[in-house]
Image (cartoon, rainbow, N blue to C red):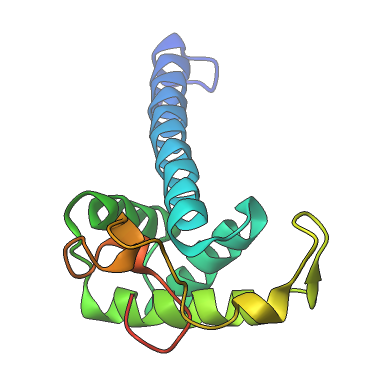
Length: 144
């Protein structure tokens, strides 16, 4: 057995730590981007996006970084595994319903926005885009 101060052991430990930090950095970027997708597609705030990802991860027993990667793929191609789609929809609806009745940022009554999101005709959110497009996310009970 090598002594605790063996330079080779120290080098190996540092290389392992560097690999872990690199992996964490990539995972963090994916999570941040997925939060941005949820903010843009479901009208969530940053903290709400994090909570949704965390909830979906817990309910599907899939690591949060993997949920984030699925959300990013969904933003690109509209594909999302059924279990994740269902859990994501429930988490978004639950998160929106927990909001205070008035949204002080916008000065609007939040209950007025609880129904299906309406968009200008021809916009991506109006249905002119492909099915499953993140821009079509709503809390009306339809799948995302």
